[in-house]
Image (cartoon, rainbow, N blue to C red):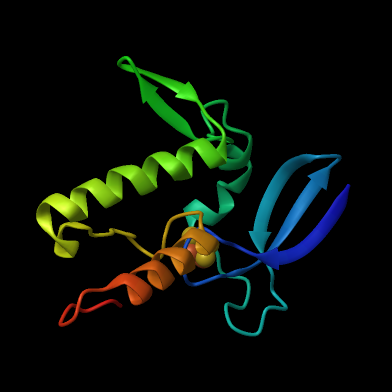
Length: 131
Ligand code: SF4
């Protein structure tokens, strides 16, 4: 077994964790007592990391709806689809029609959280608040 010291990425707190691995399988996640900020604390979500990571329903690729069915798609196709839909919405209703909800820090996606904030900072209409 290998133990990797890292940080939980489920929410913005970023608790220090120790992840126990057997090969590519996450066996257990516990709080890192040597983390100087969280001192070994983790919540139930952080400790459920193995179940999240290995869940059979986990999405590893984008899905697009085609004829009422969700089908796997590539990132280029997905981003083109998002760009076309976003552009059409803004053209019809103005830039204030686009919003973003990130819950408690962009669950399980800190990179997406940062991207969303960057997107809104870059594209916010005059007078709008992008936080
Ligand atoms: S989800 Fe829980 S364990 Fe993970 S960073 Fe947030 S508070 Fe810490």
